[in-house]
Length: 254
Image 1: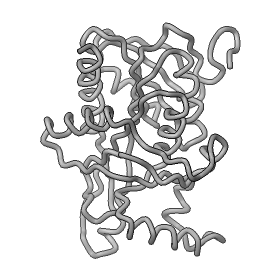
Image 2 (image 1 turned 60 degrees about the vertical axis):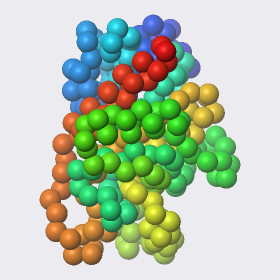
Image 3 (image 1 turned 90 degrees about the vertical axis):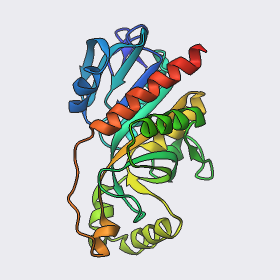
């Protein structure tokens, strides 16, 4: 949807962005990510959406923040796609669910549990939220080259941060706790808030999407008595995303 010739929410138009775009949630991460590009240029800022464009290996690439949660992520993906983006990589943080996922590890999502409200307004819940295999493989190749501990698998994409961290005070406590137990038993790796919307909408639009997460903590390891420091530095996830785009550029040109 255009307002004065620009996308209504992200405030850009065709030509402002490349076909490859990194999607952090936090607007504060955009400049840090853009600093890894050649010739980075600030494009626009509106609400939670901050956009920079630069180059990697001579090809135009962009970064655009999405804010927290599925609704704003969906808006960013829709409007970026209208401006020419066809390959998305989300970079963000997560909390571990599976006990093998340690603070500081990378989680590369192959798919997501659709525990959100946004995607049900696109397709019925039976439609899967899956990442593009080429993007997943590029992220895995990047993580391996970095010799960074990483895991591939399913993540939970939820709508409520405090529904996860304070479930017992919620009127829906029984449902929240039962489903969390189901995710643990099913081997779900980690919990975050945007990948389900990204994967579903990209699939519907015919775009490619993937996601790599930095693990801050794992509440299940803590519950098991494992004492660990929280780790908040996301530079490894950012680097993996940038290097994955380089891999995709080389593959696409080949």
